[in-house]
Structures are given as structure tokens and as C-alpha cells.
Figure 1 (tube, rainbow, N blue to C red):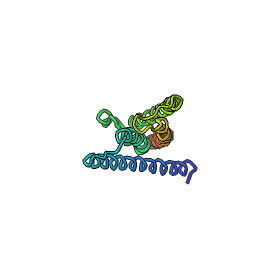
Figure 2 (figure 1 turned 90 degrees about the vertical axis):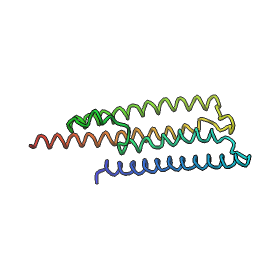
Figure 3 (figure 1 turned 180 degrees about the horizontal axis):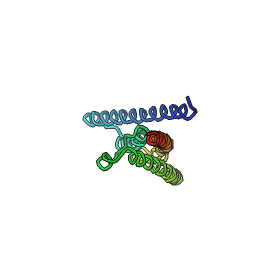
Figure 4 (figure 1 turned 120 degrees about the vertical axis):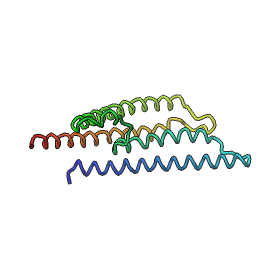
Length: 171
């Protein structure tokens, strides 16, 4: 097994585990909201449930991004590319992986700057007084994983493109 394949498997397992963390966060948000609704019926609602939902959903969505990139479950415009030949589809896939990599690096940079500002100004949630900058940490980690997933898919797309070119030349 090649070094790249071994490292790729390690990253794929980490990315899959991180997506499961996002799923767990969503389950916890559902439980928090159910508890708050039931508590509201008995006049003891959970304080800050909106804040927890807002922060939790943001983190959970970002947890899923690397998984979606790695397994190519992102939104695509297949209606336009389904009739294109396989070579064109592979080239578009290479471009998409490269753009995803660049976009993830840009977002890591901007989210880090945003987190730094949130921390410097001591922004907190209104009810719970939870420091907002802490929610940026798993989001930035997710974006780093997204960059890695983009590189993995870029390498896979290049390999597919090379093998297709080899098959076409050998005919």
C-alpha cells in the first residue's frame, strides 16, 4: 500500500468521524429543543435554547462539509454535464476540487480573523454569556479538513484522468 493511500485512509477515517460528531451535535440540538418545549409547557423552559441551536447548527453544518467533499456529495450541476464525455467530466471534477481547496483556504483565513476579533472584543451570547469565539474553533478545524479532503479528491481526479488518458492512448 502506498504512503499516499495509507495517509488518505487515515484522513478519510478522521473526516468520517468528524461528520459523525456533526450528527451527534444535531441530535443534541434536537434533544435541547424537545426539552425546552416540554419545559415550556410546565413553565420551566431551557434558557438559551435559541443560542445553543444557532451555534450548534453552525458547527454541525461545517462538520459535514469535508465529508461531502470527500465522497463528492456536494451540490453539482449534473444536468449540464451529464451529456459531456468522461474526459470533460473529469476535467470539471479536477477544477471543482481545486476551487474547493482554494475556497477552504480562504475561509480558514477569514474565519481565523473573525475568531480573533470575536475574542479580542469579548463577544458573548446574550443569554448564556458563552464566548462566541469558541464556536469558531471546530468550524476552522472543519475547514482545514475540507482543504485536506479537497486535496484528496484532487489527487484521485488526477489519477483517474491519467488512467483515462493512458487507456485512450493504448487503443
